[in-house]
Image (tube, rainbow, N blue to C red; front, top):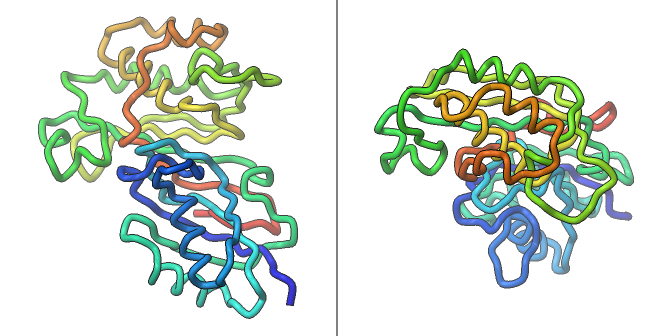
Length: 258
């Protein structure tokens, strides 16, 4: 039988990876998944992902797709992959998709979460891998006001990494908010948008935390949303606090739904 797409819901700790995308002589998540599939199927099977997470960025809901022979039931494939993958990558779910399914092009929205810690223990050995330990008090009211200003369609050229010219830098943000964490002292920044530019969430968090610390005024954010120079933004937050949480698709695509 001809291969059909299988959607894989992936979780990974990005700390030991050079990111999602294949890179020469670098360890990547895509490379590990493709290596496991090669061992199972005896030949290379390209794997496409919904988002190209950077080095150090984690995922709770990355969606990937691979063309796999019909004889492989999705649940059996999930178990077999987990037996071969390293401990920092896990296939949380798998199901058949429609022919031509593309996890990146068919995605409607992606949701990211960035975690910050506000106590000394956030910089200790048991938490520092998965959150940014910030020093000093952070004004949560200011953070929430700044996040509310992100909702809607804006240009994010000044709040993303420089790169090749593109048609536009607009992203439609459906939700952006800060929540108090329940597991430890600190906050979480949640953002859902139709697309994200390179390092956009990290530039946003770095700038918002500076606003919350009183190091720059709230009005700066509005200026950045109308600007094109990322040198005016705050330095991007470190990658280890960032998680790709979920990817939303239209029916019949249901990969990555919470």
